[in-house]
Image (cartoon, rainbow over all chains, first blue to last red; front, side):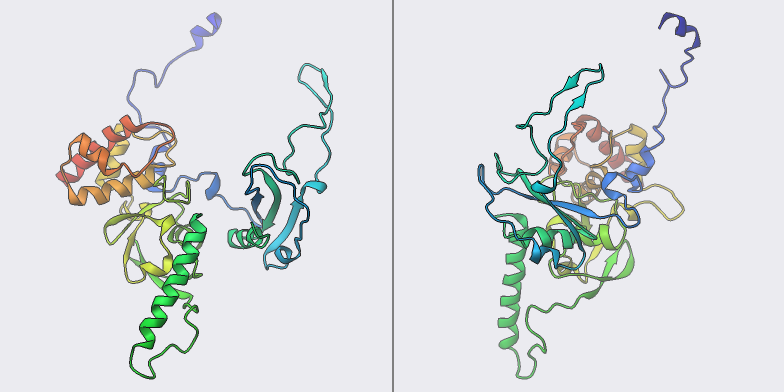
Amino acid sequence: MPENDALFTPKLTGNDYITPDLRAKLTGTARFADDLRAEGMLICKLLTSPLPHARVKHLDTSAALAIPGVRAILTADELPPPADSVSDSGVAIKASPWAERALTMEPHFQGEPILAVAATDEAAATAAIEAHGC
Amino acid sequence: MTRRQFIKSVIAAGAVSSSSLLSSGPAGAGPKTSPMAVERLITLAVNGQQRHVDVMPQETLAQTLRGKLGLVGLKIGCDRGECGACTVLIDNVPQYSCSILTHSVRGKSILTIEGLARSDGKLHPLQQGVLEEQGFQCGYCAPGFLMSTLGYLRTNPNPTRQELAHGVSGNLCRCQDYDKILTALMRGAEFMRKG
């Protein structure tokens, strides 16, 4: 830090200026994450548990998959099992079989994701979630 | 009851009331199709333009404006009438566009954040005031705040800071930048009074 002091030539500190992105933010032209769309992009929605603790005994995704625009449905059994990893300092971390999973057939809280739907638009994704009856 | 269930019930209730209305009308004036069939191709008056758009019965105004008309300035922050990021003016009254069915605003005048600045790029006095006071940090809530303020100032063009705070109390800012936002909006109101 001390040897860098000589290189520090403030242009903005102590001066009035307008941040370069403010105008876009005030005219509605600034793009936030949810405003961006890419060619072929799919919209994902989650089916979440309506109960604080439950076991999903049976999943029938056929009605949801039949909805036009629905491309894929991901369930807990399709996820890879928890894998061992290595920390930044090179320490091996053993995978825990009890680690939190992205999707589960036994939700432990209300709102825990059970399955994920990918569809060409939000309406189709929503219809697919509702087709599961939750 | 979720917001979606609520909207569904509104659609159902609307269908019931319209069918009873039509059945009490003159003979032969009844609907050719079932009451639930709503015309999908409609015209909306948005930012002074007539826009033709294909709208589903259950579609909210926020979804139509963002998804079909490309007006993504308004944000769907909560999608349940809590945050105010989707606020637009409907016949000069600020409303949460996430909680309004698009079919219910036919024939009304809609103004979004994109309609404020002039086509030559000159900012609306409210925008200019906020710009000069450097209101807002991330800016996600800004379009909603500006539209709410615009609607409120029509009822009270010269508010105290306290009154304006109440006027925009339906809008939330997660940056918790309220103090600076209010300062900026007060400056914008001042610019609007000067014209």
